[in-house]
Length: 303
Length: 215
Image (cartoon, rainbow over all chains, first blue to last red; front, side):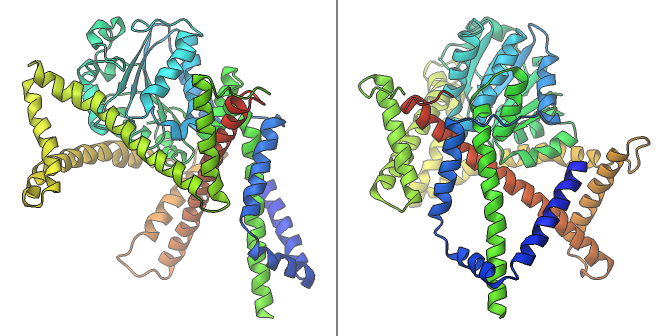
């Protein structure tokens, strides 16, 4: 609350100073000319502000928010042998935001020695999930395929798949991503339906994703759900946090970086946050300058 | 600095991806044939990938295979209903696709309605019943008051059965403020998402392609 008051007071002071400056005709004319700025200059500025922090990291501080802490704590509650459903509902277009979340989630899950059943509601998801399993579960934690983790792959049907998994997961996915019948996978003998799952970790890029899991499975099958989602989707999911239908939320690259910090990983999200913050400052500046330019032009028109 | 070797299998893939990324970026300067090439490749390959994925992950294992080996012959019914969707390409037989569409729309309307009623309507209504005063927690009390004020004023803004004047107009205007704040938050998150995608491409160009940094 205190920081919000400081921010609002600071904003008011800056606005006041700029309003005074705009009374100077030369300054107003300069701002008015900004309306004709070629937008490609803004692209160049974005390019510079992304490239420089990536090459020369600023190492700006990253503080985990309550939502990210809740996500982390939900996984911490798991015991060795618990079965977790990891639904990777995204495709390569959302990789920069969701890829780091998938890898960090897998790392924390494997540290707790839980069994992981992976599935995808997006056709582009299975190879990304397989890559994550191979890099983290198989290579770093020596998990055995079929015993400690399985990748069930993609199933068309969206909400219908979720409902079918509520009745029977092996009945919904007759074979895994590699085409092996699930009856030949020892882990799948312990998995009946969504009730046998301790937690759903949903990595979601949109529809179908977290919203559909919450609507169809949260209360109907008493499924505990945490979500790592794209920044675009995050505002919509805050309502589900309020109602405790979601127990933790990572929103976009910022959420991924916060989670990486808690899991002790310095991944691509953490390394990208300096660039992210720099571009955010530029965009705030652009919004401010754009409004001033508009204001200055209007004042000149009035004269 | 360790540039990907275009003569190796993996390196060639990285080079193709990097060049296609630059072709797409070139649109920021102005439209050009390189951008068009990358765009058309993306559309074509995506369509091919999704068709292959649907065939091998859905149609073959769930319909063709169980029918052919006799384990679930009943799957021929959804198979035929799926084929009927293509009857739209023949104008005289196009009406046949309505049977399939009727089943799809009916099933999904049912699923969506019950899901929305359970997951959104009831749960969100329940979560909105908050105490305005929580003893010993002034911050939480303020949060709850703002929350309730936001809900009521926004609902009043969308209540069109009476003219907005007097107290209703003032409440509706407060609702507009809450809406504007929510739009601003959504815009901020959207900016973050788009910048993240840009950062992802730059990390790809700097790491596996040019090899000047590690991500």
